[in-house]
Length: 146
Image (tube, rainbow, N blue to C red; front, side, top):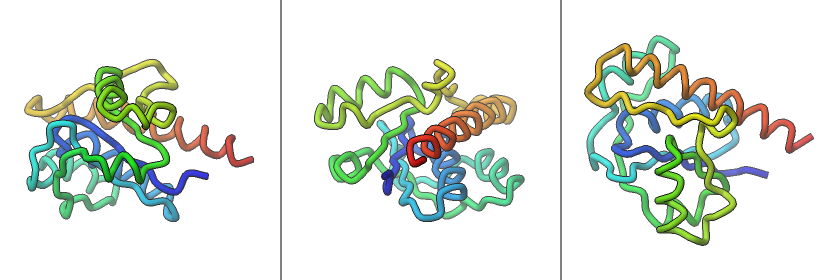
């Protein structure tokens, strides 16, 4: 049973807050956290991410970026990174987590593109990738529990 999910990106202001919000909405009984490999600590979600999520009636204005840490890694049952490179770095730095670290786009064999400072179109592309990844992981979790 998955009780805790950690979503990781670089700065924890674009991709992971959006993925965290989508997973939280779909999995009300599950603790979903997000963190950044090189977080812009203390900063809120990017305004474009806030806007796109608001269009989906999800409010991420209260998000505050945090750095990935040992407590996150120990408490998560499932860790979802945005890229294969991030997955490798996480597993290298937290070897005990191997087996619970995956890429959000693993089911499609894709990385989620980083939209930071690239405008709304890049954010829309990244969010579409995140939505597909979240849907695929939700399907996989349902199959595992039945």
